[in-house]
Length: 390
Image (tube, rainbow, N blue to C red; front, side):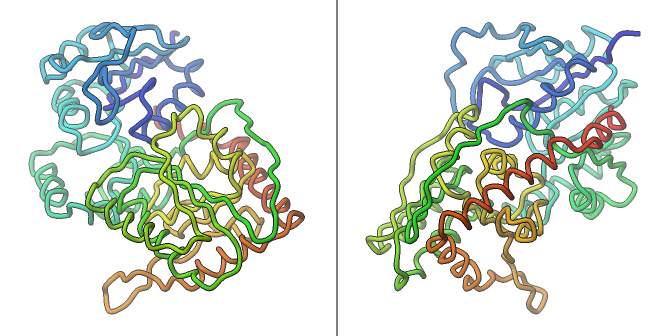
């Protein structure tokens, strides 16, 4: 019996990297599972926010990407309902896997194209059903979900969640009848960026590798730094990522320009996804108070590079202080039914602790971070969810 054929629709894929986590999720998935399944990936022939096609990649044809993986890089004119229906008739597919929910061309049209075809169809939520994600452009998203339910867009669809919370979010948004299977995201395969770094008392080098956006809470991180005006020491905080919202970025720059001289924030542009792990080795810790992550590939990459993290409690990576792999701090306080920004006092205390931390203590946090990565990567149950999913 041959391997199952899985047809994947995703807006952006390698060699693209500007779309962040979803690209890495699919890249890791096919890297891990291509010996068990044949993957056929349909994607754009441009990167996120780009209009220039990838160089040296022939569009609108199946290209061998790696053993067990073929990619169809669709040009602008070949991303229609009829194009997807044509691809669906080319082979006998066992599974159609749709990444995300809001993309018209790569989430909605594939579902319309598979309608009435007896093919197992999976939709990966990618954290888009979380309330914190729905709250961004809430009116449009709530209207879409209501219309999707009305027309039966998700009828007979199985949803891929990466953890129990995401499963609960899907049921909250679509109802308890929605079929959901949990399969955690997979890490990179056989990658080790571990490298020691000197930690001197009074100095800390922090990094954020995420798009500059309200969802990633860049402004909150800068507000925390702005409240450290009387501390003794030096903080360097480098930001890598796509500027997602120019108005939001202007707010960030206003704070950056008013920071004291011993707190330096520098925007470094976009880092290639293949260089993220190596980039971490130049810093002491990840500082990313995200408003919500269904997984957080960049957090795992930090652990894999033996670097602790300072993140919010709105990710699956919890109880970090117990094994000295970092800190997951409260981001929201519940008050009268409204979610309000939490006090930044605890965040500032941890930042000051990091600044004053000595080498021997810091090394213990690096060991804890590496242990987090190892425990996750070598979990024997990691692939079980995918066997059930497919």
